[in-house]
Length: 271
Image: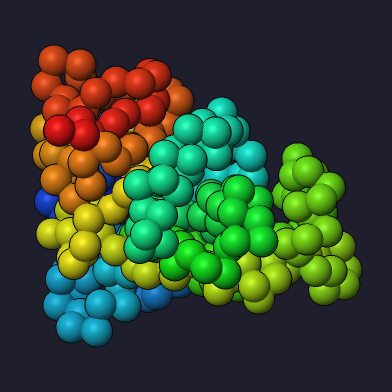
């Protein structure tokens, strides 16, 4: 079942308009990822499938489409320099700033299968040590894909996936569940709130965030979508708040309202 130009354009436009994801150069990928599933579901063509997606009030087919077309590759300790900076610079600043309220608001906006939010939670647990129970430091972790969020909430990883973690973190934050599988402890899991969220939707936060991690997701957006998203992040950050993006990503220095700390670390001005 080969995708026609018209079908490809329809799917790419649908993903761009609803989710900001630009797949207009990804015809082969769209064909490869959808073909078998569309056949399994009993559709005769990509056009038939998209008709059904748009008619389906339950949202099941749209969810399936999104899960198939979003890439979620991540691993523990990825771009570890961000976590070092978070621990050495951001958290000490927040400890002083929020010392009276003891209320931290951190958002990981591309949570994928959970490695990144659990890393952030481990760094925070390490930093606060015995004081950690005095702080309200629950981390919000969101993703577009319900498939990966399910894996993240389950929090089970194999030995190979944990190989880069420090031994003390493995011992303290994971428990063996047999057959070479390890699950995140209940204590750490309770520090993370997982939710499905589309970054193109209005941000629903009642209070502003202190730090936002949005790493390796804007590579799927065009410049205009990226600029609008960065502005939304800027608006929901507290003055002085930090914004982390992927080390291979860039923001336009001339258009970003952020102060550039390092190529992938940004800050909202405190004034």
